[in-house]
Length: 264
Image 1: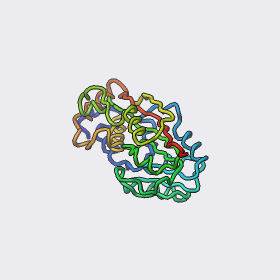
Image 2: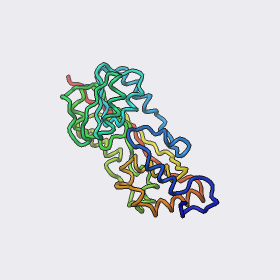
Image 3: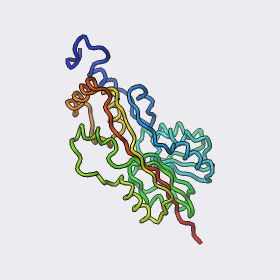
Image 4: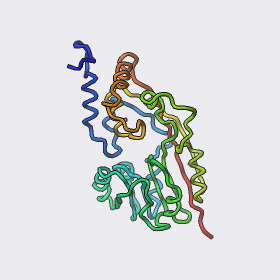
């Protein structure tokens, strides 16, 4: 019996919840395991739907850092020429199995490497939650008049959760994810900003297993996270959830649309 839970307590113990979360595979961007255990408000713009509308009108499209390919595969129509890149081998295999039947090619490519495509290969480049948008490469592979359309993770996303494990973060954390800095990076690469919207969204974690799985899956939240390394902080949070209800944090997202100027 887990010593951190009284013998007459109802429901799974702390140790059982952590063990269950550690056993769940983390590949791809399927978040269905969180159903009933954690929630995150969705941005009002509906990225997957809007992406699908743009794909339907494209001739050649690229999805950067596709994960397991789930978001791209949600589009009803894919262009005749559709490619996706991904750097993590387990996700490459998942994306290949999901996207090849749709006629899309999946290319293994580290997230910080140059894109393995020729200049002006695509009229549409999309991405959902790229780790870092490499603006010069995005501009290079876009055709003149082509569009970059993506949903980015914003600065200080899930800050409340980060600070529980790592302590207070100084200032506003205006890091590379800041939309104004990303705007400047895109413009420096020669892209024109068509639209930029940002939202702050409520997250709720209903049990400690959901926290553990989230931190294992979204690895940049608490870099180097393991349940053993942060057991004391996890136990504190487990007890807090038991006493006060769901742990609330807030994610930040911004919708980016940029265009490569058409040549004369």
